[in-house]
Length: 380
Ligand code: ADP
Ligand code: MG
Image 1 (cartoon, protein in one colour):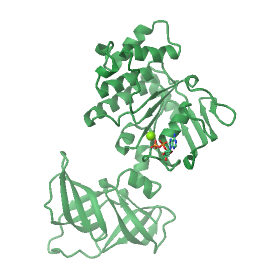
Image 2 (cartoon, rainbow, N blue to C red; image 1 turned 90 degrees about the vertical axis):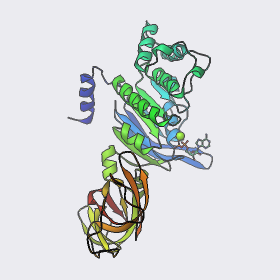
Image 3 (spheres, rainbow, N blue to C red; image 1 turned 45 degrees about the vertical axis):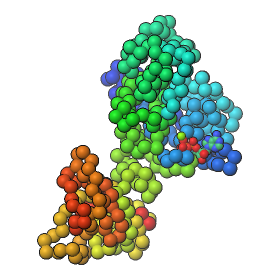
Image 4 (cartoon, helix red, strand yellow; image 1 turned 180 degrees about the horizontal axis):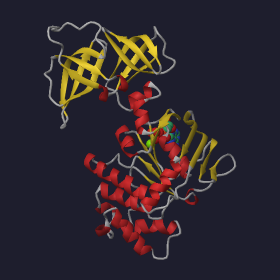
């Protein structure tokens, strides 16, 4: 079954038909004076999928979203929504005729309108149905705001205002919903709740979703697919699992979470892997085809790859020479995380952070950090 068919089947099971736009971006470029915000972005987004564009601040996320929305016009390249080109050298379809809705970081509600009026206004602008009152009531029910229909935005909490914005986005059954860091202004517990609602309601609606964030945890939790943006170009795209397992560059690895990076020299290479001497230890790790014997490399280690062990009996504080997949180190910090403890370990070739163990180790204690070869990668 193809990915599109799978989505269609899932949507049929959920009682919805995917009517999301497929999005096709080719060579998208945009410049503001001396700043090249987008440097030729190519991106395909499957109809009905939930795609997250992840990148640091200033990487061009908002610019790309605004171009898709029709708020900005590209300098070069093209954007197609469904079968229709909406932006290229000749065409620029206005925002309100692109069949999309947006949810912003700062909610952007009309302050002089009640909750019901805010949602109703969006519906009217999209040529709403015969009985808008029922649809508005039902949508407010779905975001848990039925009792607040007569309130004004300033009478609501941030989380409630963002729910109104979500209701306003989905009420007109758009083919595409664009989210620009919608959870950034909210407290942690609320963020988790609203993330779930965004995920559920958007998927139920059958719309295609494009969600931008600089938060890796949020991106991985929400996405069917993640595209990583760096300096105006897409650096990697794939499922969260494939990006975590096989980051294409040190930048992607770092941006999606590493415990640390250790310098070493390549002793041997295999298919997709390398054995690296790091200090006294030998670490097998994933490696690209460009990594060769004798190269100086950096081994980037995922937090999930690390496990703390006591030093073998009798070795005292002396490093066990030539040990495989384990680095001797010293605990320099312990942080309680509820489920257990994150440790900072000083090894002789660098610092490892977020080394998890259910029990707390003593600061200053000698230890071994065992490294899972499947969750570390060497880059030249
Ligand atoms: P992100 O959303 O990833 O933080 P943006 O798309 O907002 O990034 O910005 C990308 C780059 O373009 C940044 O260097 C930013 O300063 C610049 N930029 C964005 N909008 C404008 C603008 N209207 N005028 C000038 N520079 C801009
Ligand atoms: Mg932005």
